Image (cartoon, rainbow, N blue to C red; front, side):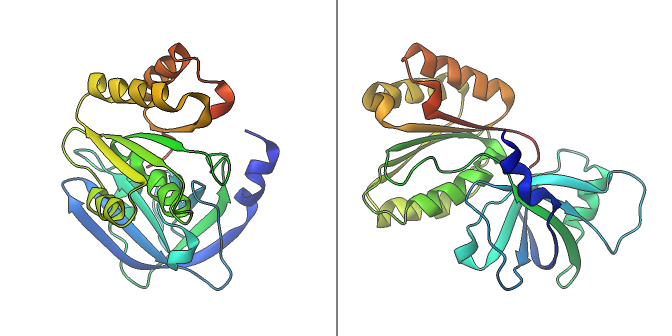
Amino acid sequence: MKIADFKGIFSKAYLEVESVENPFKDFYLIKLKLPNGYTWSAGEHVNISFPDRKYMGRKWKTFSIASIDKEGYMLIATRTGEEASRYKSHLIDLRPGERVGVRGPFGSFKIADTSSPSVLVASGVGITPMRALIKAMAEDSNREINLVFAASDYYLFADEIEAMTVENSNIKLFKTSNRADTLEKVADLAAEYGNKAYYYMSGSNSMINSTEDVLNNKEISKKRIVKDPFIGY
């Protein structure tokens, strides 16, 4: 990651909580109101802290932004697991009107160009930055966007993305439920697009490594691969 990718990490703002939703089991969505002029690029991250809460333990955590700034709010998503950590217990306990501290945005997981076909591969809550990428990419109605989405029980944002596929026939969603089917679909898309496309991956390190192996076998250039390993969801 280049030094320039960290330039936003030292910028701090205070954003007000609009809502906290629990759409399924241990999945949570936190929506934050934006101050005037607050912007970011699709795919970037922020560090979030709780300035008005005192507690022992980790004070901040990194999250991918699921929304684009044109939507007028910042959306993050997370899973708590069976037992939420102390930090995530505070995160999902946030109330409308409460403040959070936000440092950023920063990161190198961004759209590579303005027109190339795109193959996006996400697993689980790794769909978070992909929602933002798809929203931004879809502004060009001629760009081909293919999302391979692997999940074991719940496809976060799937209803919204499926609605987008109806509005824009160049957006295609492939839902898979196991690694073999996921990698097979990635191989099919790599054979179809080759190095004409950019390949974006977001999820666990093991998923990213397996997907990258498939792309290497299809002789996809490393310059065409954009990765976002789990650093905070």
